[in-house]
Image (cartoon, rainbow, N blue to C red):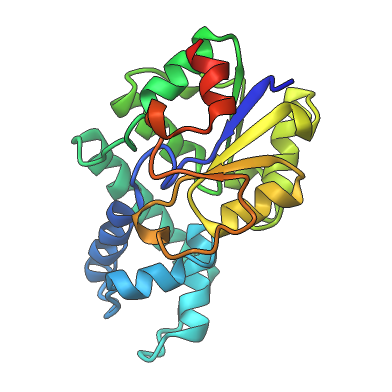
Amino acid sequence: MVKALIFDVDGTIAETEELHRKAYNSIFADEGINWNWSKKLYKELLKVTGGKERLKHYKENFNSKNYHLDINDISRIHSKKNELYNKWVDEGLLQLRPGIKSLIDNALKSKLQLAISTSTSLMNVEALFKKCFEIKPDLIFKVIATGDMVKRKKPDPELYLLALNQLSLRPEECIALEDSNNGLISAKRAKLKTICSPSKYHIDDNFEEADFICDDFTKDKLPPELRQLIYT
């Protein structure tokens, strides 16, 4: 019996990645760093989860400008990016995925437990829910597992295992909702049934291992099992 839904955030609850990309480029310019991440490049960089990890990966593998950024520089850039991103979120520049608010509202009415498993920061999660849901996320979700709580981010299963442990539930009692291949791999490694709805930056990802794939989270696009759980 399904007792809980575990949600990814970036790309699953909202189309966040384009706003992140623009925030990175703005901070690069402010810092005098001659980097500019195109949509095509950012799609490639999203194969690395975690903002600081992504910056480090780019510096080591794509950095033709040979900037000698140390870990403190990367942390500073990432922190400034998050501040700008959250400012833009507060200004209303973010859109929820279709159907996601109704899904969450009806899941709560159906007495399902809800959790978050995301590689992003708690600050970013709180900014999104404050603006788009007008409520603190901890009033909706019993568990919020974020990237700053674990050593290994997705596709490692650690974030999902943390959520399961804090929910005190078995994998077969939960369903994960994801938008990317890395998220899918993470959930499946934690032995979770997984519903995937590809976001714009992950539309070409491999979702062969998903238990169900849907265009979005509107009622008629959901798998019958989940629709029956929350809409009856």
